[in-house]
Length: 339
Image (cartoon, rainbow, N blue to C red; front, side, top):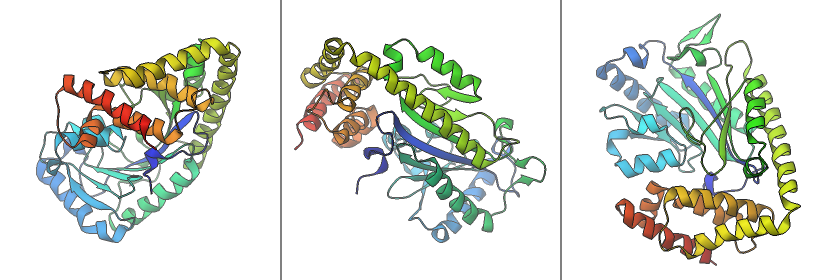
């Protein structure tokens, strides 16, 4: 069985993935900003103790027991945040299952960041999964909760439901037709955040954007999920319209996507950034049925294994940047040539 990030979900031509994230803090411990090393270790011990009872095949792993490449592999798969991976303390741990569709960061910005992820547009199912796990933890470890304000979090913008719902979308059509800025403004005006591929503070690369809710207080979880789904469906509609406009100039579109495909298949060395941008064109060409040499699975493999840490894990060794660019070009050829 392929892990979720190599699968195609609903609306996969535009929506790469969906994620539900719940921020939680344990009631009898100070927030992370006020917690010392000993307190953080006690929080981890509490979570480790209850892990077998939670189900889902979750495993408890300490950050300090991972090498740097493994941590960055998890970042590139969006299973942990970049800041969490860079944590140099002896504290910090996570729960993760074999399918890697559930990830719980322990002692990141909050005591717990419960995440459920899947390919394509799948918000309702993920909400159910995250809520179920959240309730299992909350039954044995009471959360910091206020009758008026809801779940209490380290950052005031998360107070209330402490729910962050997000989708990763691929918008090359809107970018090529010059309508991307207008769409981003509309999303922003509807009370949503739109960010780069690794969330807050990151840049959009390869025409990938992360759309998420801003409001967590004074609105229910169901409303947050519904609102984000409505916005996402509008974005899907606009992106598909933009692609139809591009397809009117068939030769121009075919030339662009096949030039990108040609560079990918023939380059002797290639950086992760160049591969990412070329793969945006190639995915567009594959989704529109122009490039018939690739399947959706191959595109997903190329997107994952051209990233620096995942490339090194794929090759089974740590390599320097210049050699990585050479090996990346070789791996691209291998994946494209797979039967």
